[in-house]
Image (cartoon, rainbow, N blue to C red; front, side, top):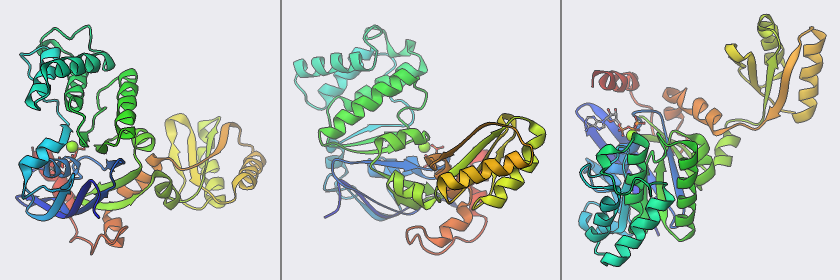
Length: 341
Ligand SMILES: Nc1ncnc2c1ncn2[C@@H]1O[C@H](COP(=O)(O)OP(=O)(O)OP(=O)(O)O)[C@@H](O)[C@H]1O
Ligand SMILES: [Mg+2]
């Protein structure tokens, strides 16, 4: 049985841009899917198709058990959406915006008022609740938009970059609200550029690029695929970077990356603590002073860079049977198209 959000071979083209090039998704009920990908990968387009705002050229989608293309109106009653760009009525106050949503969804006046008050409190908008949204800062609008998406506690939620532009405290507040919702059975598809957010909230992660899913799995599975641990060294003097790099490349299992301004070098390794000791000995032998050294697991950032940094090769290798490689150059065409907009 398909999950609460299901998509099969979604294709959407805009002129000669293939924004979606065969996207498949299956999100089990009560779980969070994190959709990651670089700018222009097709995240928002996927969300728009699944929320009935955009018709795909081909493919199939089922949300909350309802066929998205055949019964878009029914789907709309079962979902909540917070878009990448906040959609609030500028001329209403924060409180009025939230009450209006409740009324649109046929909540009783009393229930709509209570829910509005609760959400204003949670998103730290209580003080500004009776000012028109026109006077809100960017982060405040974003929070109001998120609160609006949460008024009716829908069984399936879509959030497109919900925490972009939020300060750390409000980001934390949103994470808490999301965790509560999901504990209550809501299914959520979330797009984000903050990998730490996907790490914390998402049960499963799909990485998209050029309109295709290029990798999927749990955060741990994706990290394991990126190769084991990393040794990270901060050398004391900039002139030692070159020698340190030789040492790391000699002992590591892949390319050494260098962050010049922090004098930090990182290399994937095998062999754990023993290998770390060997690195320290070798650096010491060459007279390189170390400010900091450690062994760490790959982060989702490592995953993201290793996947999307080589996206052209990866699409062909079909991380998930993604199919044959695209004719070369499409990535560049996308970039040009975007640059022209
Ligand atoms: N209405 C449209 N008309 C023309 N091209 C579009 C339209 N909507 C999206 N595109 C193109 O489709 C591609 C995917 O866009 P999309 O908005 O889905 O990316 P995204 O992954 O959400 O990116 P971002 O991280 O920047 O939000 C881009 O190349 C974009 O320019
Ligand atoms: Mg987007």
